[in-house]
Image (cartoon, rainbow, N blue to C red; front, top):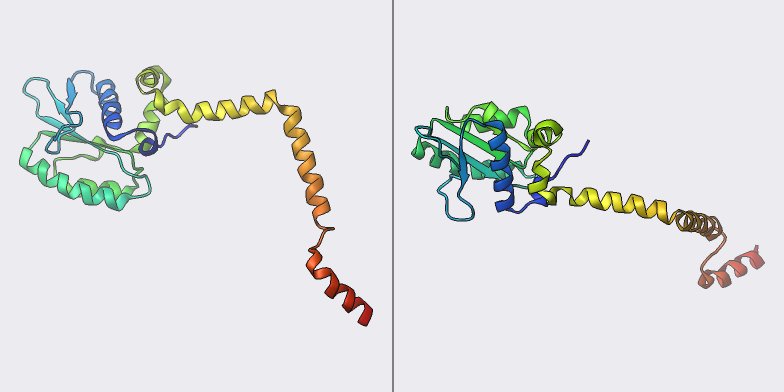
Length: 197
């Protein structure tokens, strides 16, 4: 099972576009647009469907740095309350635990439901759904780069198998013989000890 590290693989604008594409599949009855790299006042994704006030935010953070994400979300929660949307959707490259989901929902005080938080685990779950989401890779091929490397390495091992085997055997021989060798600097003192005893 592949788990993509969205923080490492996508730049902020790419992650935002990726989230928009996921949202279009999840919410087919709604139209959304992205603000791109311009100042967005806390609105990365905006619903353009008439009479719907839905905004979204995409937070691409190191998966191991929940504290930075939380600090950023405290500021976003204030912006959200000023905008007063009917619904708020949050995408993040961080995988969240039960406690963290609760903390984030509490930060947004009624604007954000747990089901509208899409973390890294949920994004990966979407991508494992070949029927509905497989075409996402066409638009976001950078996600496949690490997998190409793995395929390339595996192919290289098959094509050059005899060289890998020879090298492995040679390294094993060196390791076995290495125990028989000692630093020559120590030899005179060892000989002296042998002669004395």
